[in-house]
Image 1 (cartoon, rainbow, N blue to C red):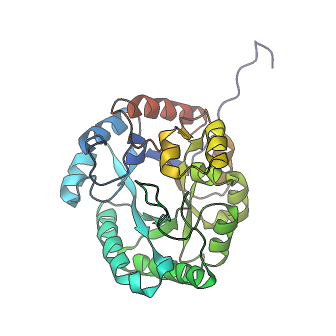
Image 2: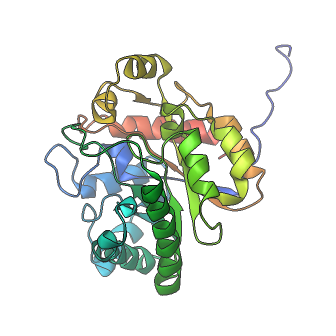
Image 3: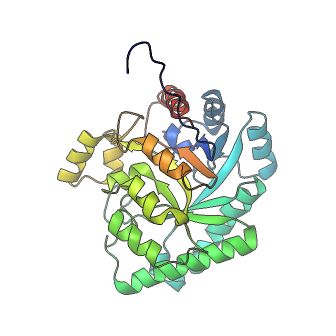
Length: 308
């Protein structure tokens, strides 16, 4: 390309709806003194140019639908999804406690007009101490409990609340990299269980997001846009560093500084021909309170340059 030739316009990504989440403000817990107040998150996410948000950990944002509707509405914000954590691999004995948590979040999610519930498997490490609390490998019986339990959850959430569940592969859980994600998707009913692809977690666990979209595109119901710093990740893998301490080292980084490249991911998602939320997340817990906003603003600008 010569200096006189104009730059090619960014491709149209008209099926992709971009948003952000409390996670990008260093929020992992409902209440933690190291996190920014929820009012500041709402103010800054709107100022950074986002119109869609997730609820984050239940209890961080107000749980009264009327109040939350007022707080989001006057900032021009809408809710795309709620999030729940489950331990369904432990079998039927955890169902009642799981449903109690899920119903609470699903009720608020529906009341806010959202259509998705992001389901994250429970960690086999403690997310604060990094202590290993159960085996990182499931046996055949636990896999059956996980897949049948998730199918039941998907059907009941849809029947009772009209929401679609999208399961989120995550570092330090039993659904993480290519092998376990494929096993989970192959073992669950597509009509009951969708996929939330988090590009950062999948790369962290060695996966290729574009390949996953091309292979299991019919399962993709939701996206989390995230990148990892490959140099820090190499050290994390070499030294078997748990996810929490890895985040504190900066393994999740600001786009477009890391991997995977987000433009090919967005292009592959657009090619599916369905409407998809693409929610920006950058794990930063804990972080200085003034750190998230400038990153969020730059990331939004970057995604606009990609056509999103």
